[in-house]
Length: 296
Ligand SMILES: NC(=O)c1ccc[n+]([C@@H]2O[C@H](COP(=O)([O-])OP(=O)(O)OC[C@H]3O[C@@H](n4cnc5c(N)ncnc54)[C@H](OP(=O)(O)O)[C@@H]3O)[C@@H](O)[C@H]2O)c1
Image (cartoon, rainbow, N blue to C red):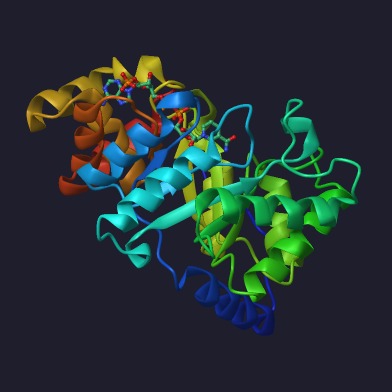
C-alpha cells in the first residue's frame, strides 16, 4: 500500500536532499544492540555485545528503563582496550518528564529547552564521550499531532546537531502524520526514526513509507517480542528450515531487507551472534513480500 504524500516543490526537494546528505553522512550500522532493562548487567552485556561485533549501541537518559552510565562504562573499557570511538555508533534519547519516574536526569521545573540541554550534557557525561552519533526525542508530547513542546525540543536538537555534538537527530514512537509534519516543516529533517514494529499493524508500514520518501533511517524494536505469531508463521518456518537459520534470524533478515535497522536487546551471547549473522544471508523479494503481507 502506497501512502500518498504531498508533492514537494523542486527547490524544497533540493534543500531536503542536502539536509538528508548532511544527516546521513555518519552511517548507522545494519543492526543495533539495545540496552533497555539490563539494570546491573548493563556494562557486562554491552561489553559482550561489542566483543562479538556490534558497533551500534542504543540507550536513553531514562533511569527507569536504561542505565546510561553503565553503558558509558562499557564504551570506556572498549576504548581502553584499543577500540576506536569512530567505529561505534552511540545513540541516546531525550525522554520528556512524562516518560520518567522520580529519577529525572534534568530539572523538571526548567523550561523544556533547558531540560533538553541539561539531559544532553548529562548523557555525554554518562557515556563518557564528547559527541553522540544519534540523538532522539524519545516520544512526542502529544498524539496524534506534535505539540508545541515537541517543536521547542526539536529546535534544541537542531542546535545540538549544528554544534557537531549530536551527529544526527531523530524521533522515536512517532506516527505517520507527526513524521510528515517534522520532515516538511523542520529546518533539519530527522535522520532516524525508532518505532515499535508489529506485524499485526502492517509492520508499521505507514511510517516506513514516510521514511522511504524522505530518506529517513527506520529502526525497529519489539521485532521478536511483539510478533510471537510470526516466529511460528509457516513462511518463516519454511525459510528457517531451508536456509538453516533460526526463525529469529529470518525475522531480522526480513526486517533489514524491508528497509529497517533491527534492534536486539538479547542477554544471550549466542543470540547476539545469531542476530549479527542475519547481516550475512538473503531471502528473496517474494519472501520479503510474503512476510510483509502476513498479519502475524
Ligand atoms: N524507543 C523506545 O521507546 C524503545 C522501546 C523499547 C525498546 N527499545 C529499544 O529496543 C531494544 C530491543 O528491545 P525489544 O523490545 O525489541 O526486545 P529485546 O530486549 O530485544 O527482547 C528480546 C527478547 O527476545 C529474546 N531473544 C532475542 N534474540 C533471540 C534469539 N535469537 N532467539 C530467541 N530469543 C531471542 C530475548 O531473550 P534472551 O535475552 O534470552 O535472548 C528477549 O527475551 C531495547 O533494548 C531498547 O534499546 C526502544
